Image (cartoon, helix red, strand yellow):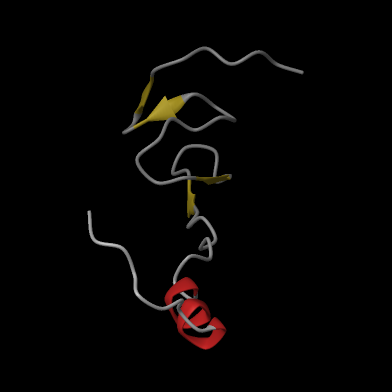
Length: 60
């Protein structure tokens, strides 16, 4: 297996790692209850997905 002949500099390593940061999750509005939710997922507040109730949600 080939091995690196010289170590990579700190600047070169940092340039590679600039893209490793996590991006914030994008949120949309639930058309049924208007709460924030992740796109293409069941709404955790009302249990609706694509206009129909998929899961029962306990009232707290």
